Picture 1 (tube, helix red, strand yellow):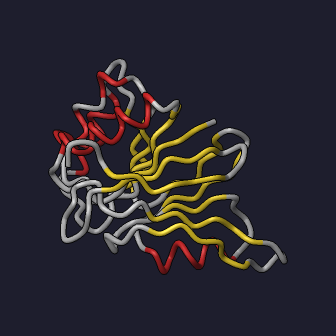
Picture 2: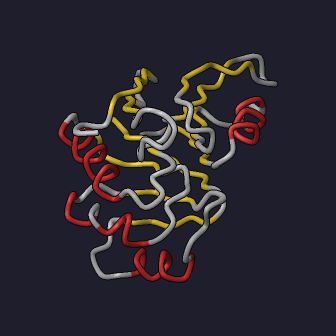
Length: 171
């Protein structure tokens, strides 16, 4: 199963939609948004793309009530998780949080196959040694909005656990 990981879209809906569209065209079957969405209008353009989107809110929380309402609309592809998310995608255990230090700590537990985070606007893919003697993949896709850094997202394959940071088309 391929997935798209984005973060820090803030209010840049068109760039978010461009990244998700490119990932969908590359075979992504789900999207993880690691926070700083600001509001539901940023996500509204994703509804027509038809790919499930798992969203947390980050430190730029915005209107949480409106976000929850968007997730509850008939036919919505948005699943709003709040502060963090615990997911099972493609038989992999995935933890999603906004902050990189929290993400690294959760990766170090060894309880997760993949931990996704954002906040820093610095794209990074690395393996974290964990308490169970293995390694956990930590993915920070950077900022899809291109704020103080290039506009990027991550595309990955949960079967092979291969991930890449890609530029947002048209950014």
